[in-house]
Picture 1 (cartoon, rainbow, N blue to C red):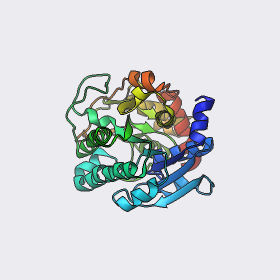
Picture 2 (cartoon, helix red, strand yellow):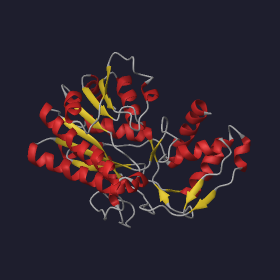
Picture 3 (tube, rainbow, N blue to C red):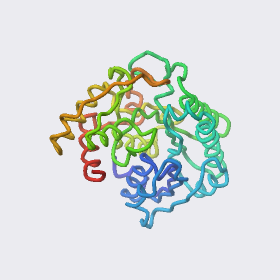
Picture 4 (cartoon, rainbow, N blue to C red):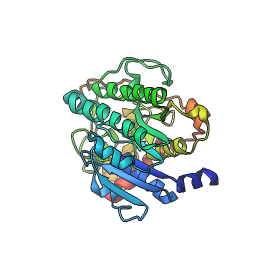
Length: 332
């Protein structure tokens, strides 16, 4: 990022919703390190206060405990803000299958509240977390932004509706938006606990306890696992971009390389074994496939490179080494 872009960030007031979550807290920390003024909004439904501890006392940071399902909270958080990085959502395909109503209330109703609040308070640009789940049953690889299939879960439906609403708010109210379709993000601060924990931190914790991880299916499903620092880069570029062609678009946010779950567990065992040789002897087990799972996911990041000058620095191996090191030092 050049000097002009850094100055742009330092002079901006930025709202991060879902600030106590995995991605949100990392975004807050990155922005504060640059010198931005940051507002954080979270209701701690899935986020954790400990994720705020590194910067809660920072004079450039203000935290608001509130719920995006409450329009008043959204208006309060957006007041005087230049840019919104909207990360707040209820993630997880299985959770949405078990409880589609709450997933819809948060991900659609809450999203709409944030758009309305951003419109009414004069926010310059609304950048939001979209999802690779939007590709649904499309079998085409790599995934290209303009070609999607039918959603396979209530969660996927909510994230596609977000894109439709964002497009409509540009057409109707001239609110500039950018959607970032995240592909299986992982890294520091990602929660390894709970019924809907993401696969990488969950498997890491199981290996560290000498427990056998259970892979859903035969392990040949593949994902474009994306390290958190690539995601931070995309969010920051979405704020500072002066390319008008870049606005009011959705972008794949990934590395552009796929890894099977079998390959993933092999890498995890290898990297964790550097800290504890006994982990190399932990076996992997296999279970039934999960409903709503996409078999394969691989992103084309050509559009992001062209319009946002995206240049991801962390492939799966580099990112996993960093993530494993963080988990070992913080959670062992």
